[in-house]
Length: 394
Image: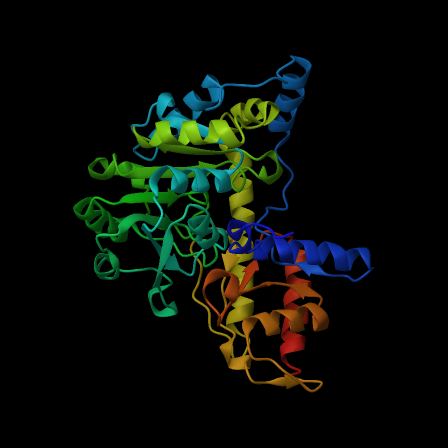
């Protein structure tokens, strides 16, 4: 018996694979420090957890509307207004995480053979989701010299009569790059001129450092009919396991998304939805505390990696990742084994430094590794000490 052609052309998530390998090694008793998962180490705020318990006690354990409970969609609509949004609750679909929202968006916009422009480095799931939608990814590489951001000219030159969608992600996973307001202004001009859809993945928009003046694409009325905005509560609110994302778009896109979701998951978890109502009412001090800690960690890991001979890395301006270039170590050997790639170097660090990072091959950047600083300072200090010592062996 054979599995489907569809299944065979999709690769599993490399970031989740790293997380699974870390758990396996820990079960074997190895003191692995995980720097791979994009998951805040903070507990979900107590107010959110209490709201979930109350929802259970109140019996909110049944199906909800496919698009999500009205109260939550209204909260989301109000929240998005602070970024300049004009979306109403009727133009929002709550999903089982932002990952599902991205896939919903691709299914709603793409036909077989359509082209989807994908800036690289990219989040590891984007190219596989593009395949799942039957479309073809057109990779648009960005370099360290531009802080991993594409230019308007690059985008304009990449658009053809087959182009249907641009996937735009700022702040970026895996690089931490953040487009400034002026840079987004110019990107939006190209989108508006071309008439293509844009899926704007803004899951990290609350996590911007150094007072960078950025913007949500919902602030641009000239592309309102082309925009499918994706966001969620996983990252900024430390709610990864609650699986609440959402998509905002005008008709006909939002109607297509609602219809598609109704057939393969229906509504997101009812308890998580009611808990999420509390997230939007949190005291800003709760979120500010987490942001301050992330900034402190960013400064530390950037300083440490910048001082390691052979590594180059731009300073990340958002999210909670740093993306060092490690190509200087390719071709070096240890115990008779030559390291030819970021994948091989990541394996070396796992074995010799007890530190788990994600190789850049997962993100379309084979000279880099992704390091998440969404873990404790103690873990970061130990892991980078061990990484520095291990690289000194090469």
